Amino acid sequence: MAAQVEIYEGALDRGLEGVVACSTGISSIQDATLSYRGYTIEDLAAKSTFEEVVFLLWNDRLPTADELTALKKELGAQMTLDPEFVKALKTLPTNVHPMAWLRTATSLLAHFDKEAQDMSEEANHRKAVRLTAKMTTLVTAFDRIRNGKELVAPKADKSVAYNFFWTLTGKEPDAEIVKDFDTCLVLHADHELNCSAFAARVTASSLSDMHSAVVSAISALKGPLHGGANEQVIRMLQSIGSIESCKTWIARALDNKEKVMGIGHRVYKNGDPRAKVLRAMSERLTKKIGEAHWYTMSTMIDDIMREKKDLLPNVDFYSATVYYSMGIPTDLFTPIFAASRVSGWLAHMLEQWKNNRIYRPRGKWVGKSLQKLNR
Ligand code: COA
Image (cartoon, rainbow, N blue to C red; front, side):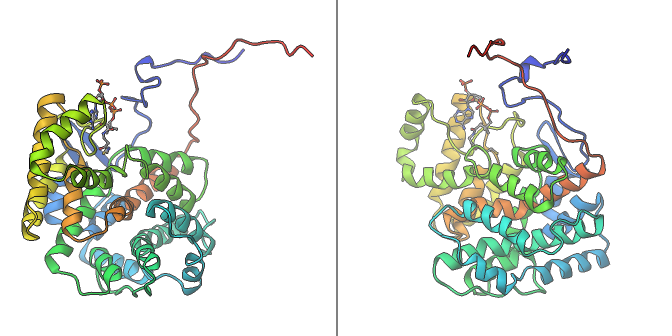
């Protein structure tokens, strides 16, 4: 007799809403408070750097000054892409969405990593550093390759945030923009059991390797209901076009039962704390480039959605105008999310492997009853 399957009906076919799928000590969402390893996102956004957060996520504590220097050095050394790998990368078609390219490029990266199949703790640490360091360079490499430009060598003594702009443009980036971008990386680094982290953990639970689990996560992040929303937000604003058109555009979208991108969240019902930090940044940066109307339009949509649907902005809503103001190409918005979130995915894998059991849930049978094959 097959074991009876106990089913939490509330979550069934509802995207596992409310289901606790594993224990985790990486990041926590309590009402409108997000914390990484016990530090609130507001504190980390104001007072830490992406590299510190990477250490925090992987080690359950902040680094000492020496540890931080060592991690920065390791990341800096690993940002450069191997010339043979670049040769192979250049054979990939670039007439696809950058997330599709990034997914394939990450998979290809495994073929050039001698430790790809080594599951020892030491090798996994080294791979985590390599994957985190190279994800940013991959994103900018895509943009340069598709535009027929030579790749720019990363500067080993500079941060991930600095190198994003440096390897994208080959120009010295504005220090204030680098600082703001670093804050964006901090804000996106982890988010409890989101869709892509869960995908990473599920793949890791079969004792598959790190690169494979990152590929699973990138694939999940790619969708418009997850990381893909930030790109859709700026496209929506551009399609609305003006402050005057906001009200009617949103009313029509709601009448047509369309989702307004960057709005709503499965877990936060009283607001996403990351959106608050990004809203202030969006106001400042859109003003700085002389295009404050994008911020004004965003706040109008924000107000309408609160009033009409009781829905609040999520991390993707204001990050769209932030990245736009930084001059980043629109289709790189979601890959940037991956460049930060990879640190969280890796933390989830390391946590999963510390107490692993393969994920293997059950399905409630709603199909046909047993039939005879009459032949
Ligand atoms: N615009 C319009 N209506 C929305 C909405 C949005 N962005 N988000 C949710 N709703 C509505 C749904 O239509 C639904 O209404 P109904 O009960 O009348 O049918 C209700 O709110 C619940 O939405 P649901 O899709 O079931 O919520 P969820 O928990 O499954 O989804 C999201 C959460 C984030 C996927 C969803 O809010 C969404 O699609 N947002 C836009 C995409 C986005 O920004 N994603 C990034 C997430 S960080």
